[in-house]
Length: 487
Image 1 (spheres, rainbow, N blue to C red):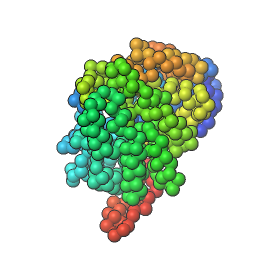
Image 2: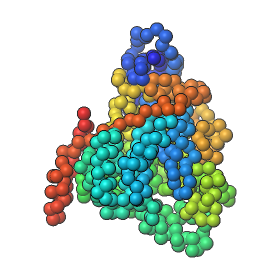
Image 3: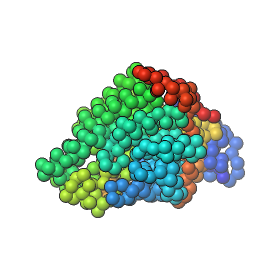
Image 4: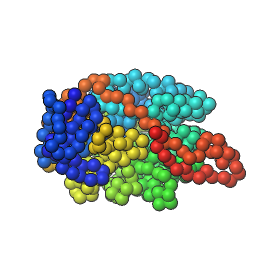
């Protein structure tokens, strides 16, 4: 099967050039002008549009069992919605309970994901510590292509990782050449504030941001970064939403520490006023963690992306319908946390980033695709327009516009947090695995077309026994390893 994208300007994280792209059997076979094309090749006319790598969303929760219910987008509907917006791969999450085997839960999630319309991979959460978890991490990393492990510093009494878990899991990740990722909120502080607010009679959605003020994120980010620094392990902070956390990452990076930061598109453009809306359903639809913040935090997040101190953009896509949100009608702590966004991330970032002059087109590619591929070790298979790369491509029209609407979206949720926002810059055509899966409003997603993408671990210079010896020395701190891609 062959497909030709003709006439566009190829934009990558490094450069832009006018060229045609020939895709054969799911891979990019040639880039240039006047290419030799096999007979029967399907042709897409890119015209005056850009051709960019397919978007990679490094943070989604499809079909997630959470807070007594299950997210309303499954792996098919969620990835299909992503294709409509130019996202051709997700990295989702396996989240075992404290008494569950991470490896067993991984296999369950792999089964759910078989219906995916786009390529996918998994981060695996570490929510307890034991010899079994230690062994599972090794098997996941060495046999199943998992090179990142998630740690929730929030959700006390459920999946919260305390410092004991962080230290052991981070150390194991270092032995394996994997990357710890962290949801940075001080769970003890959140729990304390939740109880205090409920005792005061504050039960509505407005209590959610009050129970998770910026300081609880800043403290947790500082602590996670400090623990990673002591052990010498890289760390990736997910959904950075505050100036405090962004500054903590910037300070650590300035000292040479290997710290990465992720920003949600929602946090860049939606502020905490949504929680004061008198419509309970509207306010509850915006309950997610971390919550939306006062506007001045948006300036810090944009500055982090522009400066390179924050590297990736995501959605934390985790949809719940109004009836599910209503589980917390009388108690804001019982409102399922999560919003949608996978369909609109790319357009929102282009409109508010490139469209306002904050970002160049190449920087847009970098924060929506390439940086994620490089950090999680799937570049240049993903995140690149290069011969041999997977043929995941988007014909991006920088001048076309649309109005985001709950009524016309493909996401399975009652309210889109961007509802009514007009954006300029849209995916005109999306190609995934060399196949045209979205074209001018026609979604052609196929159930089960997505593939699991293995992400090989990096090879640390320090080996496991060296790390144990260093950590056993009184007052010793392991040096930060150099990381090299495993062949």
